[in-house]
Amino acid sequence: MAGTSDSARFEGARQAGEPAPLDLSEELRWTVRAALVQKLGELVSWPSSRIPPYERQFAADILVGLLRTSNAEIRARVALGLVRIQDAPKALLRYLARDKFQIARPLLEEGVGFDDSDLIATIRAGVSAHWLAIAQRKSLGEPVVDALVQTNDTPTIEAVLRNPGARFSAQAIDIAVARSRGAPQLNSIIIQRSEVRPTQALVLFWWADAETRLAILRRFAVDRAVLLSELGEFFAPAAREGWSDPEVRKALQLVERRQRNRQAIERSSWGSLEEAVECAEQGLDMPLMQELGRLAGVKPQTAVHIFSDPGGEPIAVLAKATGLKRPALTSIWKGLRRAVGDSQKPDTPYGRMCLAYDFLSNAKAQTVLRYWNWSFTAESAAAFGPEAERSEFSAAERNASLLLRRA
Image (cartoon, rainbow, N blue to C red; front, side):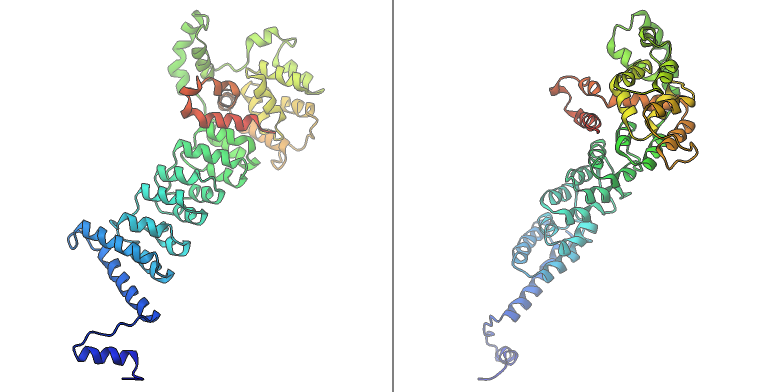
């Protein structure tokens, strides 16, 4: 049979009833492997009515062993075949999910067999391309979103923030807010999420662009009508006790109607907040900034943040919250040695300050100012108690730290 082709030799042996001669050519070896892999891939996708679960798992283990030394085309075919298999073997899913991105992508984006633990394990073992694919899945639970934002990869965080099917925990929003300081493209996306709380949006405010700042004030500046109605009865007994309970005093200060500090005004060399603002027009230095803060009922440190900010929106919040009239804005602005422009043009810091002042109500401005004063200072972080008891508040402390490091 010299010179006879391989196919002829195989056919002749088959017809004579003899065993086919062993052929180890590369082409035939990969043909058999491909057929075997295809068959095993079908078996692992069968329902339990056709194959017992333990046999299916055994088939999956064999299949993983073959895939380890199979070429990319074969692995890709198996991965694609598992996309719609709800109860696909976990070991096989996880193996293929960590393969080259071109192979893993269909599974990561649309595979229905994954549970949260599978996706989290893949995130922890994967790279940015895999993270992005998972971030674009139609539905993502809080544990998976937590794992994605904890990669601290900006494109991944942006992708999951844009995903309407992703559910964010408070911790995930905290991490995204912290990351947004160095990634300004995240700011406007974060505040569109329904899960964002006022404390988170109002710390992000300090490094947000002008448009995002105004959006934050419009959405998160709320009044306290219900709290005032329901908690009003506690002010009189607390006063009779001489405000001896510091935590009760802090809590009620957050909801009371009065913003200015009467005791500070009585001790001040100025007779009113208006007099101090009028003096500030001649020059607003650090001591005067701190004094204005005390008169306005906020910590001196909070006042310094407000007056040192290059934008005008924080000044508008303080002025409106304390009942200062609109001309006070110009006095403060001049005292900071900043150019006064057209108040009707919101493309300048001065114009945005005037715009924010006009659309904020007194009650809403007070809410914003009190969040800033209470939540984002070193004192508020310390108020959470001993280190061992406040681990769950680490995100709040991180936000305070971010604010306090602001240039």
